[in-house]
Length: 124
Image 1 (tube, rainbow, N blue to C red):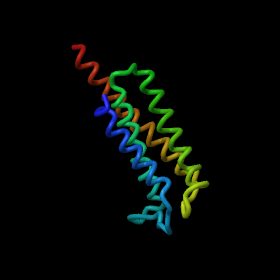
Image 2 (cartoon, rainbow, N blue to C red):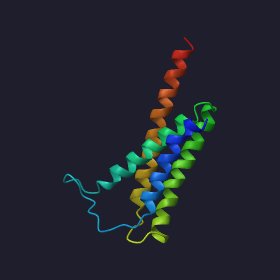
Image 3 (cartoon, rainbow, N blue to C red):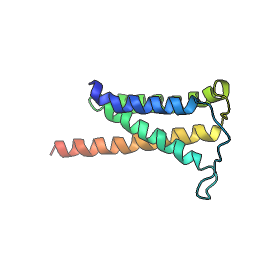
Image 4 (cartoon, one colour):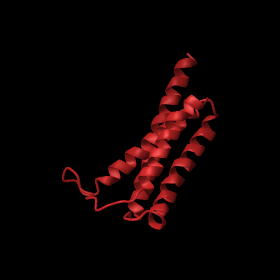
């Protein structure tokens, strides 16, 4: 069971550490795209939600869906507040919260669709 959770736990730790480490004067534009960091937020939380939902593959679908949504969504919001209060050189941005939440929903939906497809194949 722990092996199933290991990727999700490790990815969550990476998000936690990256979110609360001191920041610098990072340019938020990359490849000429303003606010490129939002893509990173989206991708990090999409990956984490996918891993959490996948780790819950033995649980009921509704529980897995709600647990993943609450864990990843609330973490994204709370870590932004953590940046505001704890991390020097970091900024609190509602747009980051939105990117985190949208990423979590996207990763969750992809994992949910894969789970449903697998369940459909195994019942045939």
